[in-house]
Length: 130
Image (cartoon, rainbow, N blue to C red; front, side, top):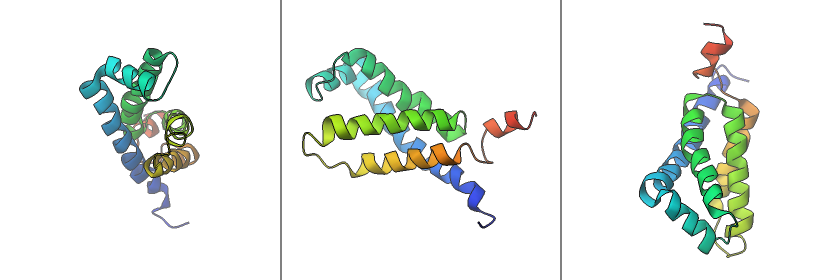
């Protein structure tokens, strides 16, 4: 392992968190929770679409912001993996839609579950007792 390897988590957090935040921002501020719920119900056939929209939007906004900052990264990344697995298997594959982005985000989130916050994170300050 080289001396820069520990900082890979920072780059991955910015990339994965940034993409999720962009999509969460769209759900929250462009479509709204009701619009997201309508999409989930009519296009994806998700039961309990409104609570699902709240969960997905929370993961993709609050979770993404926490991942970018390095706060509870492993937990939020696990939630992101579930988000992408559901998107791939419940919506994209059955509709014959491409799923490259979602698969890449799943892999990135899996990497963050393995790497954790990394040394360039807010959480590291709490772990040091500062």
